[in-house]
Amino acid sequence: MALETLPTITLGAMELRIFEALRAKAGAIASRDELIDAADCGSEKPDTVLRIMLSRIRTRFRRLNLPDPILNSYGQGYRLESFALTVPVVISAKSAARQRQLVE
Image (cartoon, rainbow, N blue to C red; front, side, top):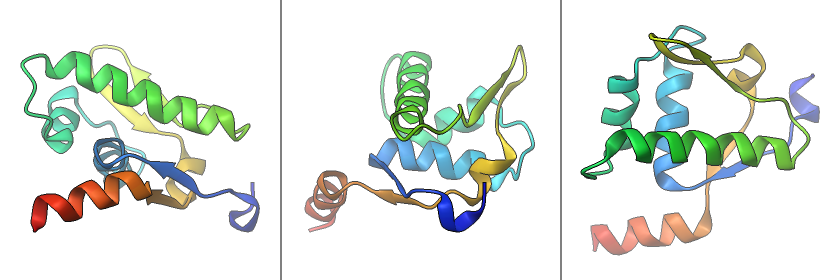
């Protein structure tokens, strides 16, 4: 897929942090712990939160008829497919507004 044909993916704040952590690894494997740290969720069940966020990211790609961007390497972690490294992503308006409220 050429970059100009890829749609922009809108993600929530936590989804975006996880996606950017995967993107920063440039196709290398990111461990669950690295992604949990990136999510910065403050939950008592961070593994559950991570699974939910990864599912949401995958769903957002599927809705735009794009392939699954995340590969699971059993026992090691996750990595982004190479095409996903070039997909434009933005934070959702709702998440951006929530972030601004937290700063104020």
